[in-house]
Each structure stands twice: as structure tokens, then as C-alpha cells.
Amino acid sequence: MSAKIELVFIPCPGPGHLVSMVEMAKLLVDRDGRLFITVLIMKFPFNSEIDSHIESLTASVPARIRFVLLPRRSHSPRTSFFAFVYHFMESYKADLREAVAELSAHGSPRLAGLVLDMFCTSMIDVAVEFGVPSYIFFPSGAAFLGVMLHLQSLRDEQHMDPTRLKGSDAELDFPSLANPLPAAKFLPSEVFMEEDCRIFLDLPLRYRETKGILVNSFAELEPHAVEALASLGASTVYSVGPILNINVESKKGFEILDWLDQQPDASVVFLCFGSGGCFDEHQAKEIAYALERSRYRFLWSLRQPPAKGKLEAPQDYADPAEVLPEGFLNRTAGVGRVIGWAPQIALLAHPAIGGFVSHCGWNSILESIWFGMPVAAWPQYAEQHFNAFHLMVELGLAAEIKMDYQRDLLKGSDGVVTVDEIERGIRKLMDGEEARERRKKVKEVSEKSRKALMEGGSSYLSLARFIEDVCS
Image 1 (cartoon, rainbow, N blue to C red):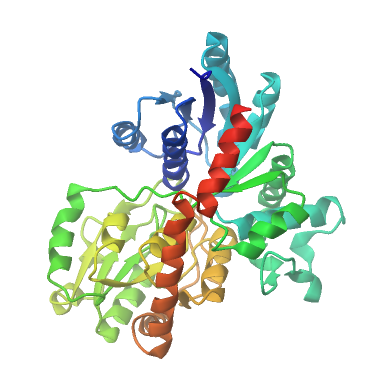
Image 2 (image 1 turned 60 degrees about the vertical axis):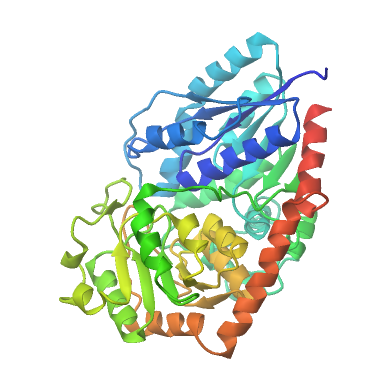
């Protein structure tokens, strides 16, 4: 029998990062009987649901995957959420070193490497201490990874400050994208503090020290970006996506699914903005007016933001009517539903959903592609989500609602997207020749995403290459 091999996974505890990394672990052990995986779980101080979330994950994983929950630590909020996440990871270094030491001491299975979330670069030092390779799991797309590497190269090799670029120098013109992107969209001074910019550019500097980078994308979606990564100095890149948990169900969604069963196919607009997506009263009213004026059927996941300066997860409104226009729920009772948390996978898979208004989080983009769902793009956080937005629009898979909307998790947003902008985006999503062409294109890309994971597909082969590299 072949020797057993152990990998240690260290995810960021954010839902979008944690779920995709666990799905990656499941793919690996399913593909090779030699592999065992230990997932070390940190806990955000503001996420009270992490324990139940882990419990649901452990119920659906093979025996060769195990979870080790590290003690919860309290942390004071910093000037930005980005800086908080980075320093939060750093604070767990001693706990993670101790956990890896315990695993390494057993000797069997043989510890073969650490697979680290994109924010966990300080754990590269732990891998070096134990004499094993480290790999980055990058839960976003190849183009965004290319942007990070390019900006870091501008700073460290060409001695330019990406936050001060002007004119043509401000465009990220490298082979990973058909059209140049303005650098200001990735390092906007009004959102990124000086510390944020330093962290953002230090991350890819350390990626270059690892043995490889696993990217949650597939070659057919981002062919230019995947090819360009080598020229940008990336270590070995494995495009292994789309990594998705498409089997999630929730009893909380059953009533909504029953309502959807009564609606015509492709007739309902679904609005959902990710695990951190939320709106204050002013913005919620603009969305409501737009939905009412558009006259489309709708399903809207509306969540309440935490108080400004509070580092907490959004919650469901106790009574959504308090922040919606007077009489809105009664006037739209026959055509729409306003809910809190949404079982997004189950809803995107439902035939009644005809369009998806999204914050452009990478998991949401991959899910919309998997289910052949056209998107109206409303990126919520400038750097990563803007990149996904640009890709979707460039490929003809998304209509635009608002390109330059920026929201900080700690400070909220001072800007408001107007009723006219929202209504225009929804109409472009649902009706007209452009919408029909978009629906056709997203179906084609959906087929490619599924083929990529099948035996002989691009991601299937890329994952096989990673397994071989780890085991040898």
C-alpha cells in the first residue's frame, strides 16, 4: 500500500474562504486514497455562527478530513477590515505552529505541506520551520492574482507607488486582461489606508516564496490571465476551479422555494449581496422603488448593517418594513418577497430565477456561471469585486448597475446608488436582445465550467498535477 500523505489546510474563517477550501479538501481526498487532510480552524470574534457552520461541514466530509478548532481570541477592531483580517491571522501563528508540531510528531501520515489561505502568508514561516513546502489557496480568480502580482512588482522592482499613478501609467496593462484596468480601482486612497496598501502588496511578495498557488478558477474562463501568471513571476499555478459547494440545503429556504415553484420560468430577479452584504435605510428604499417601478417578480435578500465602527456580521432585519417605503410590502405582495439570509445555491439552481443582482464576490460569480445565470453587477468592495465585475462584463455575462460603488465594512458607505441606476440595470438584465445574448453566452460558459472538472478537463488535470507534485 502506498505511503499516507498529510496536508494541513489553514483557511481564513470567512464563509467564502472557508467553504471553498473545505470543498478543495474533499476533492483531493476523493481523487487520491493516499491523502489525509487536517483543517485548522480559527474563529473571528464577531462570528457567533462559526461553530454550527463547522458542525454542518464536518457532517458532510470523508473520514480522511478532520477539523481542529483553535481557541477563539478577542481582537480590537482596526482602521479597516482588511488590516483586521491580516493581523488576526498573524495573531494565531503560535497556535498554528503548536498544532502543526503535534501533527508532525506522529510521523504517520507523513506531513507533506501546508495549504494556506491567501491572507495566511505569515504561516509560510511555519512551513519553513518544519521543512515542508507551502502552497497558497487563492479563492479568487487568476486575473485578480495577476493584478496583485503586477502591483507588487511595480512597487518593489520598478519603485513606483501604485496609489499615486496618473494618466496612462495608472492602467494595469498586462497580458491577463484584454482591456487595461485603472489601478485606482484596486488601491483607492479613500478606501485603502496606508497600512492596507502595504499589506495588499506584501501578500503577493510572499506568494512568490511558496511552491505553488491553487487558484479557484478554470482555464476556459480566464485563459489570458492563467497564461500571464508565469510571466508575472508566480510560482507554479494550478487552476482547479470552479470549487463550489453546490449541495447546500436549508430548511429556512423551503418556504421560498415553494413560492418560486409557483412562478414562471426565468421570471424572477434574485438580489443577494454575499455574507457581508447589507444596506442602510436610504439605499434599501432606492432598491425597493426600483423593483416596484420595474414590475418584475423579485426575491430580495435584505440584511441590516452593523453600527458604524462595529466589526460584526450583518443580521436579518427584525421587521424589514421599518426600512422600506411605506406600503411597499403590501403593494408588491403578489410579485415579490423580501427575506433575510438566503440559501443562494438552492435559489440560483431554481428554474424560476431569471437574473441575479450580485455584489460580484468570486464565489457568487462562479455559482452564477455554474447554473447559467446572467448577472447584474453591483461590486461592493472596490478591489476584488471590481475585478470580477470587469471580467463578467468583458465576457458579456453581466449587465452593469454601478461600477464605482465603494463600501467599507467598518465605515459603511456615504454613496447611494439611485433608483434610476438600479432599475436600468435590472431591465438590461431581464429584457431585450442584449439580455437574450447574455443568457446564451452564460449557458455556454456554464458548460465549460462543468467540463473543466470532468475527467480529462483542464481543472481535473491541473489538480492531478498538484497531487503528483505533493506526493512526490
